[in-house]
Length: 397
Ligand SMILES: *Cc1c(COP(=O)(O)O)cnc(C)c1O
Image 1 (tube, rainbow, N blue to C red):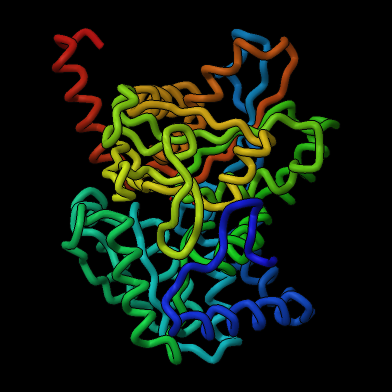
Image 2: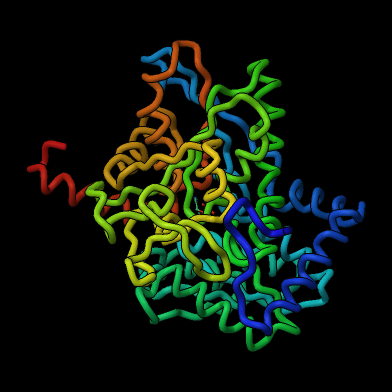
C-alpha cells in the first residue's frame, strides 16, 4: 500500500482531508512525470535557492584522529536552511493544484521563513502558525516572516510549540481544504507528505553523492545528520541508502538525563503510536498522551519522527544516537572557532555526534555531515545558554 514504510506511515485523518490528500498525491505524481515541472523546479533551485550547495572539507576537526570530516552546506541556501528545498517545491505544486492560499506550521521559524520567501516569489498568500514559546525564542525569524509578507498566527494551546502549531494548521486545513494547500515542513504527517517532502529534499543526497565521488574518488564511510521530523537526514541519506555507507541519525538528548520530558528522542526512547495523521515512534505515556519534549534546538523539539525513520530504525539500516544540549553548544562554538562556520543548533547535534564518533573510525576514514542550517537565528539563545553554563561552573568553562 502506498504511504506505508513497513509498519509505519499511513493516513490517519478526518474524512474531509481524504479527498484533498488524494488530489495532492495525484497532482504530485503527474507533476513529476512532466518535464516542464522538473525544468521549473531545477531552475528555481539554481536561481532562487542557490543550488548546488558546496561540500566543505574541515581543516582541523577530526584531524587529530586522522579522520576527514566534510560538510554538506545547506546553511548556504537562500533563507539559511534546507527547508527551502521543500518549500519551493511544494509552492510550485500549489500552483498546479490551483491553490493560492498556503498555510504552514513552524517551530524554529526556518520553515516559516522558507515558506514566506517561496510564496512571495511565486505570488502566493502565506499564513504561518507558530507556537508563542517558539516565537519568543526565534524573534528574528518572526520578524523575517512578517517582512516577507506572511500572516503569522501565534498559537497559545498546549505547550505553545511546534506540535501545537501543527495541530492548528491541520484544523485550518480541515475548514478550507478547497482553496488552501498545507505546506508541511518535514517528512511527517499523513501520506503523501512523508514521500513528497523526502523527494524534494533528496536533492541534498543526489548532489552530495556526486560531489563526494568527484572530490574524494569514493563514497563517504559514514553520513551523519540531525533528526527532528527527519527531512534533512532523509534527504541526505537517500543518496546513500543502497550503498555500503554507515548512516547515522542524531536526535536531541536535551539535558542528557534520559528522563521523559527532558529530551526529544522518540526513535530512542519512544513507542509506536499515532500522531498528526501518521503511525510512527512517539514520546507518549501509558495512556497514549503525547509527552513534553525538550531540546535547546527548536527544530528538534518534536515528539515524533517521520514514519520512514521508524522503518529505517526497525530495519537497522540507519542507527540513531543522541547528542545533548551541552554537546551541541560545544560543537556550535568549536565549529565557529576552528573552521569559521556558525552552525544552527540543530545541525550542531550532527557535528557533535561526528566529533564523538571520529576516534572510533580507522585513520583515513571520511565522514560526511549534513549541515542543515546556519546559526544566525540561534545567536541570542546560544550565547545566553553558554553564559549560564559559565556561571554555573564558576567562570572556568
Ligand atoms: C527544521 C530544522 C531541522 C529539523 O528538521 P528535519 O525535518 O529533521 O530536518 C534541522 N536543522 C535545521 C537548521 C532546521 O531548520
